[in-house]
Length: 149
Image (cartoon, rainbow, N blue to C red):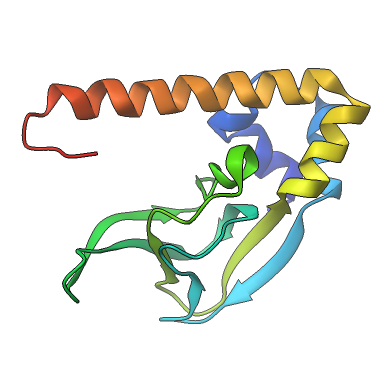
């Protein structure tokens, strides 16, 4: 599937024009991973966001005492690592490919920032969508008394 079409279906890109989607696609870099390949590890510095175009990934948390547990599986059209566009802070989880030939497109924070400086509307729309998504996640996490931040 063409990357622009995938981006059009990603909630983070909701509201972008076809031209803006093309600009975002132009700074996206294709990466392919096989089963069990680590895309990034928890607590490592983050500098990229990823969009899944083929295959599936597993989001895995380290419990701090050597144990790991899967929290989520993501597939085509879904994103992960988006907080790196905001703060380039440490990763909150590890991400592994679940299928051979899992294809993702990476967008670096520096290229995204440069694009936003060229077209501030892209930055506004994406950041608004990211804020809405993070707000939703926090609000729903706070409704679950067993959940911890």
